[in-house]
Length: 331
Image (cartoon, rainbow, N blue to C red; front, side, top):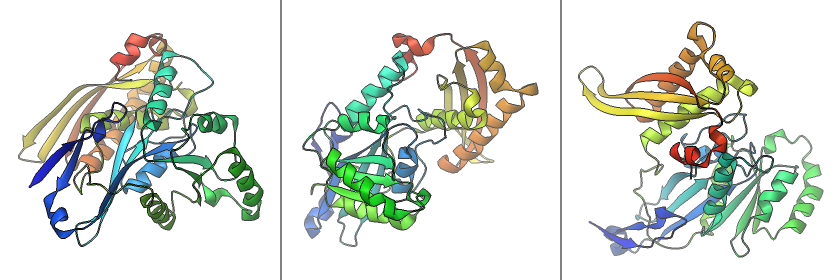
């Protein structure tokens, strides 16, 4: 039996309902739960870190800046035998954009600021040994009073660990970090250690989500993200980041052959005819590959058969049009 307590905040609707498991209350098992924002400049490894912390891919990654455009909530629950334990609610954010001031970038930056507000803990992610102007801009946004961990990611790329000491001293002078966590998101031990550290900063309160839930995002949303990831990975630096994906149809049906079947129709929106030709490729081969790789990954994520159709349309100047940016699902 589950009772529900309202604890809503404007910045984080995921706080709106907290599930209180009476069985845990009867056994006296302590539960911890809280919001953790993952912030940093573009391409510092935030989405890769989120996927590692959750234990499954829920946020798309690529080498192109601004791959993440929405606030992605990832959930990880580490339960003990008594029904207690810790539930981590991670919020992945776009990298804060300082170079351009388009309507799209203003929307992305608004998402970053909203994610930071009202969280229990902030993970400020940087590349170990580096600190750029982009890092400094994000650091200036952090609220005083909210515990912040300095997460030095990509430690595996640092060849001389002794060089980190002066860098760390400089970082400590820039901000009053609660702790310093050097790590590589590719190392399971490092990920487990970071989870242990995070748990100490989360309040004792009932879990907000079921033990098996991994994200609050819908499969339809994940479908658009996966298509966009494959788009960026297969076009590289040729395609400007002002390209997006809109899901026109997401229909689920039962199938004797497959059990569960999902039909997806999606439109890739670009700003120029040249970009459209680039995505389609010679005889449609590149578009076909984007669809194939997206289908294969979605079948793994959703555990069902997927049929996907892709179109490419030109919408000139959409990234500078606030109304159109909102119509494509950005805040």
